[in-house]
Amino acid sequence: MKKQITLFGLIVIATILYSCKTEQRIRQIGFYNVENLFDTIDGPNDDSEFLPNGKNTWTSIRYEEKINHINKVFNEWSNPLIIGLCEIENENVVRDILHHSDKLKNYGVVHFESPDARGIDVALIYDSLNLKKIQSGRLRFTLPNMEAPSSRDILWAKFNNGKDTLFAMVNHWPSRRGGEKESEPNRIEAAKTARVFIDSILSVNQNTKLIFMGDLNDYPTDKAPGMISEILNPMITAGSGEFGGTHNYNKEWNILDHIMVSNGLLENGKIKAIQNSGKIHSYDFLLEEYKGATVPFRTYAGSKYLGGFSDHLPVSIEISFP
Image 1 (cartoon, rainbow, N blue to C red):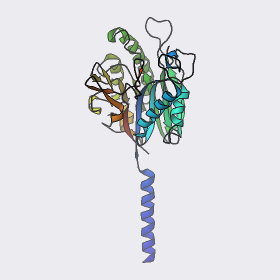
Image 2: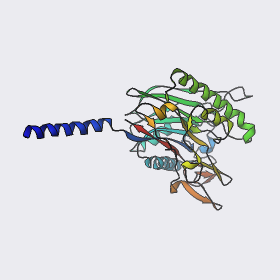
Image 3: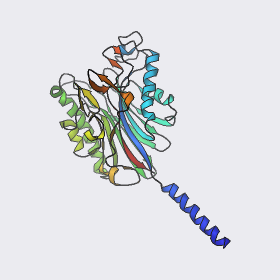
Image 4: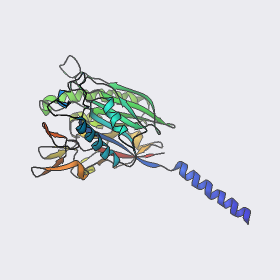
């Protein structure tokens, strides 16, 4: 009888241990346009507005408040695996986010300096305890009718977890300055560059797990994002959030911040994106009322300091992760 009980107990323990080993966890992959995260140091780029004696009176106190605001957003995410960032000045400001966070202490950084005239870049942070960075790089493109590039590079990184490989891309496409239609060729050029890279990856293995994220400065129905959604699956839609968008312009909400994934990330392997998990986060502290409308609570309105977060709302998806 004792032998039977002992054998039964061993079976139960073995089952529990096996279940714990194979249990999938839910993780987030997110993106956030943090809006002008500059340090207070005069750099080689055109950062004169964001210096202590500049137009915006950008002091260390305001800078630290901005860092704390960004971490307040990330603290709402239970278990982020990867977070893409845009409108960051350099790698140091990204590392300041990590240094001021208990949750992100073990996260690595992927960043490259881009040729953007204002000196704002994209970056990526990742859980270095669960992802091993294998390779990373940047994609640079020349804007039409310009002799040299003047926009943000597209960042990419390749990670491993066990036998699974995951590619991540972070984008901040050219703005609509000068007019939506007039500036559209710039975003189409960015889309072409991203599309060539994605096609090259998927041509080697159509089951490749790839996540594409960023502020595309275009809506889902526009031509440039459509060049990507032809081959990837959009995860952020009007139904992903309370207001139907990530950005408010002239009291109208729409989606500028996108996350798209390959079929391989939806269908194969242990790392899988969860269908319909796209989320536009509209925490109360990210919003304010302006002239009767609910809008993102931003850091500045012109040169007037508001002390808010960003003019964009963050977005995320959920993935099943071993």
